[in-house]
Image 1: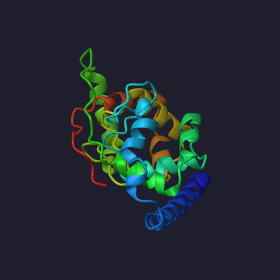
Image 2 (image 1 turned 90 degrees about the vertical axis):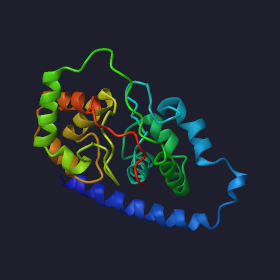
Image 3 (image 1 turned 90 degrees about the horizontal axis):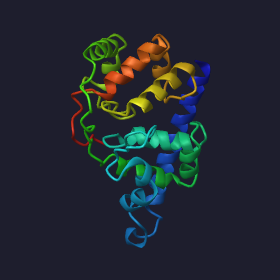
Length: 216
């Protein structure tokens, strides 16, 4: 837990530096017309994996549609600084300036939530009931909201890809996935691995994820 606290403090300090650096850059960068917009840069750099609308159909690739600016910039910062382990994302993020972190995260926050495509088969009612109970018991709905849409540094998780949710939950449980705070590590440490899979199953098929953009 000490390591998680150190990471949280380092991330908070780093994000403060990013905010200050980005604010200074606002007054010194060339006119916007002289460079591609972040919408264009997202299209050329991110869309091939994450989807033009932010809903990826690639295995293991998270949905960005409907995510919040604060959450997005935190993850980009973690990738850039080598605190999250993903070679592809690290390679992309390490080229970003502080202003880029802000620009990309602000653009991501404009992408409306996109509902998951209809499933080929109906969800397993027993697993959905169990998953809902786990979400209540372990207070997922307290931080992520009753509609699982998150807010600020808390991600939208409703209808996120199941394989990505599984990877993330197990990563928090083992300590492989760093968090902005210790909250997720502490929460999932009390959940059996098989229940994490059930929770991922439920959240991925959550029926109430709204299709509106989140506030920045």
